[in-house]
Image (cartoon, rainbow, N blue to C red; front, top):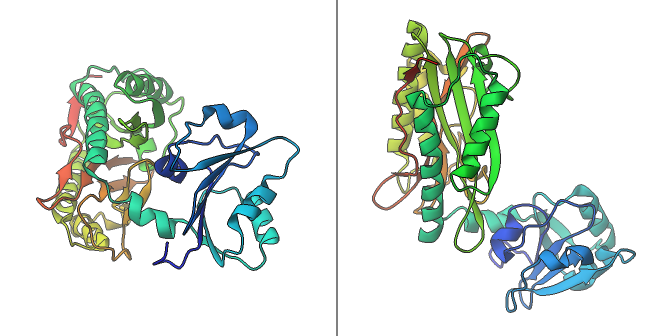
Length: 356
């Protein structure tokens, strides 16, 4: 905080709160706020009716419950005091921030991610092991998809997505974060929402899914994997496209070494797709950080000059999306280490062809 010139850190709903104090607040109209001064004790302001959910941590924070009818902004202002600069959690509700700004006209407000992101983005050994366990869990689901053990043809995307969600929980996650099932031309939409389209023989199906798995310290860490299968004989154009994708993914992972700027990793993956003539169809960044949130820092994207350091965890997920025809993506979670990139996912990268 000293380095960033921040006097007080204010964390409300979102992943920062459980990461730093072990409590995951419900997104309510009642204010929950962790107030962390540069010097002195931290305090967790929490609605009285939510207080029983808080595991008190003496020495970490003092609990400040408030009852309906009280104004929690007054409590917050008293704790913030004469702070010149306050860093506010990026996901804090705008209504609460507006009230704080009005009550503290002499305080400058900045984004808390300036303080929290450099801490959260570097995983220690214990965090990496939870990411590895979560990755292995979704690998098992991906392997079943690739082996044809999960029926596809004749089922709706939504039905298959629901089955994947159940499997995510069965494999040890405590929460399902997302299940993308995109068949045929729907796969040209990177974040397609599984719907009532029936999966047919002779088409590609994109699967992108993940959940949150709780580690030994009670904090959850995310999995995220993307694989594609083809139901029946593969169209030559799709097979060629997918081979380019495999090469792009391999180049991105190989480039993800300690000291390499994030944008250079993006460039390594992107160049393969550009050189193959598919550049206009790669419409997103190569990857995103991952940890207690499915998307966090660092982003593997052009313009991000941040060098990778040991413990950075991120996705490598190049994609090619041809509108109204087909789409494909290949994603692993990778951790930068002194010994080179360490993949949290081991499921086969090749395009699996299943009978349906």
